[in-house]
Image (cartoon, rainbow, N blue to C red):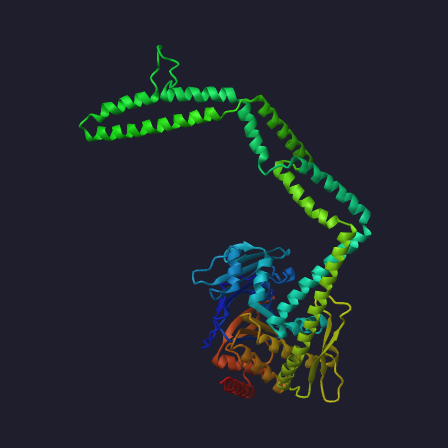
Length: 598
């Protein structure tokens, strides 16, 4: 497709009196160069937003853009011929949102209005970049944020939920926060048990090799223990060696400095020419100024008196320094021997440039490794007991998990069945099969969980993906999603043609349920059903139009209201936007939806 240069079209949101700022909401989405979309900016309001349009117009590009923005896989095949696609979104989040905390950790800054701006670009070669609050970040950071901000429900999710492992996860989510906390404890206990079992097996099968490795470590620890070096001792010894080696020169320098400051206090120079020392000179100058009547000179005299005190103090410190100097050759030899012993350890057990710190780190690591290499009877017995205790904990937690799943299954099945009753499946029965295998627990517990469906009276309960037709499966999965979504803490929920294969009264019930969700969440729905679209607070229409200059198809998105919305619903109902019958039906749908929402 050829690119078109246009001014981004801004599609405004409808005004609604509902506000979901407590959770947060997406206020704006800009899509550039993605699929058939050239450049369009959508403004979202709170409540329910529906996206409609003819088949092939590009409705799902809105969902694709949202998925890409929040860390989804970048498909270069979606990039238009201009070579780069981009998606940018603006979210308003409460100040105490966990998403803000994570964004701040990544270096993100809020925009002038306090919103968080996310953006993503994808090249035709598949290269992708992500930005959060004006900072370039790994795509994984955006994807991590998405877990708490966005939930996408689509036909892919229906296929995913048909798998038993996903059904088990769904049941765990439904069971609530306490159950999920128990599941986390189980996972940690299971991992610990498996690690202990693997460690015990390793020690049994590799006893000889481990014993040899342990001997090497013990020899090294014995060498280090014989020297018993202290942290930083190598540097301290180097300083001592220097002082002891240079003791005579250091003493001469200190004595000369002290003489210059305070003169010969020992009287050794009596009768000779005594040089003027610093304190005497300063005292003479101080007396000369102190007798003056000029205030400025008096102040300077005080400064000189302070200087005399400082010089005397330095001289005293120099005297103490000289007294402490040790020029004992025996002490020097002792320090040199100690330094040589530590240097030998450094050469053998420390890495390049690590010094004594590397030796001490090696010793600490060796102590830990010895505990892992111990193949003595006592160590193996202790490890066996630890492994068995861990397995006992796993079994106990697995039993509690099974009980929690069994208790939750009845309530979950009942809620799904209640939703199905409103979706023209009043006789359908939903249940869970929970088979426990305590002798062979897995990472998620000891249960095999399967969602069963009996579509009509007398029908056997079968796994849901085998016991339902295409239309029934869509309704079952939508019912499951509605049950989950009501308790989902994410602020933005997206439903991508989950109403496929549904019509008639059930379609209206789908719209009613999505509108109910929109009282607590911001809900975006891609739909082909007028009965669903009639419940929208904001109605966006995707139009495709031929680009005469390039001979290709381009997509625009516009918000509709009033008579334009009636015409769009009529088109969805009859295929003819100007049909009087279709428009009358459309107005009837809008009235029914308004009454249903109160």
